[in-house]
Image (cartoon, rainbow, N blue to C red; front, side, top):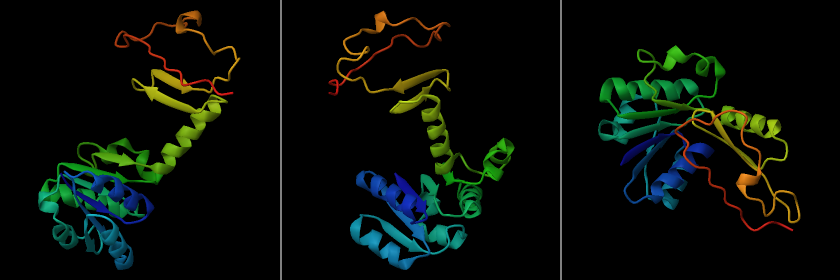
Length: 197
């Protein structure tokens, strides 16, 4: 799979590391910092292109015409959105992912709608962290809180201490939910690592 990553900051470098590990991936990183690009190319099996990721000429040099996925992770929301839009308008790039941090953009659903900016998926690391922390605050003592089924089901991970009231219990001993579970949820499966002392 041909993947172009725009931006060699912390998020872009991490994405390049993970994606380049897969033998089937052909990864190109675009950034304006030659020193960082040289370092990445020395450590990873990737191509690099020096320049502005929203420039059609730079995108062409990176191979946008045959790219399967564009991942725009620069520090500029505007560069990320424009690069995705250019990739779609000029080259019909199938999948476009953009890092968009400003709520001024992310709160406007129509902006990324059918006739809007050509971004298939926008990610906001800051918003994800904020939402995750809010869920942890809502469930004090939780190690992890995960949502499933569009938020209708929530899994809360907690630590069960040896000798505590949860250790050695089966799910059938706990009270049933007060409302009916969606029919698409067939079974509940619990796993229990060795209790901590």
